[in-house]
Length: 386
Image (cartoon, rainbow, N blue to C red; front, side):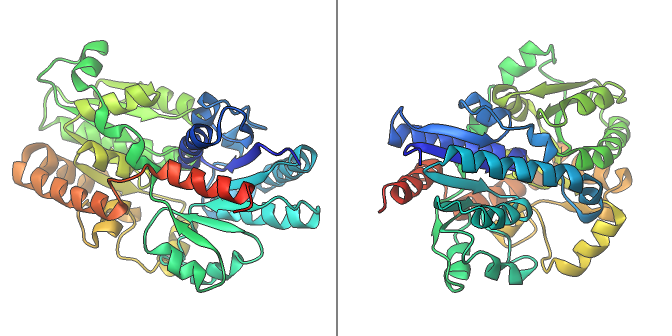
């Protein structure tokens, strides 16, 4: 066993962000001799990880979307198991993507790998497929939960679980420089800018980009001079840039944290896919509309399995409809454009949503020790046998 090697596996860009924050926390608390290997994306690469293979090979969601990718995913699973067995790390940290990481845990056990297994981001058993709570005992030695209601659910099933908070709280999303962003991209001070976030998986962007572009076209009829900024990530950057270049309003695609958060600070409102980005927008104080589409078969299954009235994290945390959600058949320009126009024009609506976003962030755990340091301390405790 390599005593200071931590092997991390992130399966999608949101996990890549969490992994990067965790790496920074581990290095800060554990010292410069902490080593990293595994699977991640551009954020983890910036922290020093040389990914075993591209993150895009795993970043897919939905039954219909996953099926054609199964052979490649299985090859990557074999490759990951072999790499872990060869490197003999001090600990294995898997991040979200429970479908892949559950299979990885089984394969590691069969291969005789005995390094402690830590999983970050609890499966959302409180939202759908509650039986998954019984999948973690024997597969996970420690579960790091982002939401405060989660540890009790898993501890009742015999899993050691710890609430560490959500690293989005330390992302810097609230520290973007809006005037500098406008100056860099020659956006006039009085122009109305909207941030558009169409997701981080190809299955998401393929469905949402045309709808979001048509929404802006409709919105531009009542808002002359409208412009859009589209922060994107490595997994889908090429496709996003090609599509937004054809949008009917002036649009720029940007990458990197400084550009992303600069766009937020410069924007009056946002149109976003559901996901971690909604918490980033909440932290930045940007009023938003959430839109989401998926394969019709996946959507049918989701309607049957998900037992919640809302899917966006700000609404789930606040326990009420803070952010408008237009999903599946409701995710159409005819409905998205009026919802977004209200946030551009109505100060009362803007103030009400911002108050709700503040409430959600308070419940998430804003304030106190950084979540990545809490998580890093727990992982180092496992490595050191505490």
